[in-house]
Length: 476
Image 1 (cartoon, rainbow, N blue to C red):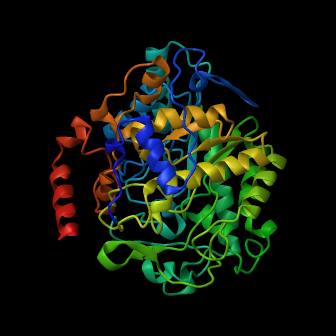
Image 2: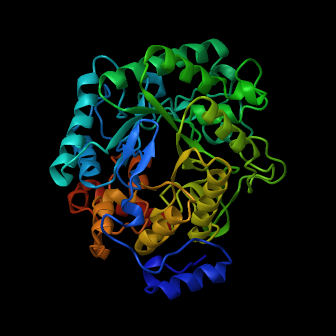
């Protein structure tokens, strides 16, 4: 299906007319305020201090570390860009595996005693860059996202999955090569993994990170455990059991890394896996009841925030204030998680105007924020708004629908967006991410990730030509 591209909606009225045509509601301010009094420039107090503005950088992996889990110059370039962005909340930088078998690819960063100095140096580079451009870092909050990739682990070969799963899945097992119970992590395995997360958190604290994100999103292990309704044992079945992994890690951090703050990025709802249908258009992999979606409504294509709201209440009880909301998974339902008009090479054409997906994320996050006003929410899914991102972001913050506007893909092409918006500078159209999805197509095909269409640095790389060839093959 053909949807109007955002860059064709050249006026606010045209953008609003498209929202009206779709019968969706996305908050929208007509004029962007700038300077210290601007809504997006306002500081935010939290239980660990003050965060200087309302922009957050979401964690993004570059698939560009060393095989032993250390950063490279490409990694350092990305983190330096995070520092010069002007955003005052750095949500994790990127996903860092707590042990080897949890790596999403053989070049993912790993935190251990051997790598710790270089993991610390990433934070130092980011902070020093921020200080150089903005003068102060007293209101800059930098965390580290900790992960085990679970079903999507590729620790040794980019082309070879080595999944460790929470349970057998009615759709994903066939899609991702799980054909026996041997891939399931038993309760004893999860007990040991809890210890690994706690040990990694202690190292992150030693490296100067102010908080750790105990990752529970995008189909990775923490997220999959939340939907283990039929898993036996102490980590499955009841809500108490399905949240035991998170609670145990938090208890361990409180005991062994006192003073380290904790956040969590959570897929607040999920859909059934999608697949290409006629003419490549995405469609559900099957119809009927679907039980494996945390926050799902049972249909596979809708959400129910009853359990996610209960999880928010648990976070409050655990003393966790920082929540980054996202949805779904880039591996099996990317159109709801990362709205884009151009799919990656292994994806499908979006079955809905991507603006519908943006609205779905904004509205679901707003529902949880209204129900849990003491939590601080970082929203996701804003990049597809492109030229109109500041108008929507300002309205979201003004109306209290989220506390921070999270930026992911956008800062690969345009890292200075937060600083430019707050300063009132015109956004250069040639730098605005148009969701070409080449930052995903690259790693899906064993290459590094970066903005190959818009960043001159990546545009000049040979991978750019390989990606263009892949896209032509997909179209053919």
